[in-house]
Length: 124
Image (cartoon, rainbow, N blue to C red; front, side, top):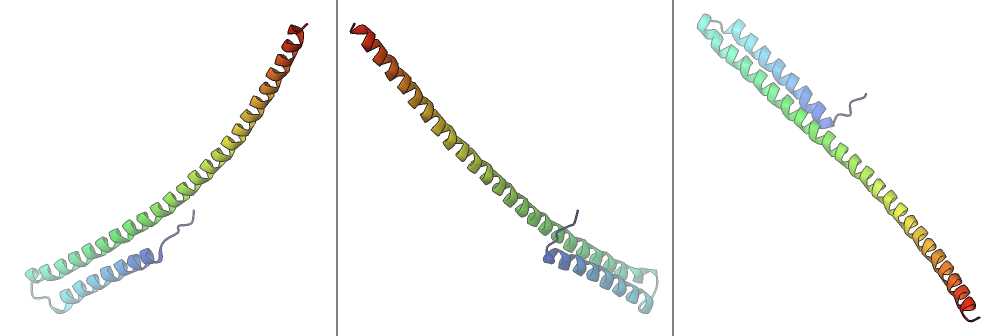
């Protein structure tokens, strides 16, 4: 099954990778060029953790947006299906009503015919 992603979702997913890459590169840069001891690792690790959290948050918003997009398409398709079914039921109901009217007319004819026979036999 082919995924139908919104362009915004694709853009946000790509941006999350860019944020993660830039955060990792910045942390590595700080570790390599600003290393002054084991305590100086806290800043690059915080930078790395922050950038990865931001990337996760961006991906989360992309996925939520995609879910809303998919839900909208699903609801729209469901409403169209319901509309078609209601239209079919309406047509069937009209047809049934016409058939009932024909049956009523048929029984009215039988009733008149029987009344004519009874009136003809009753007058003799």
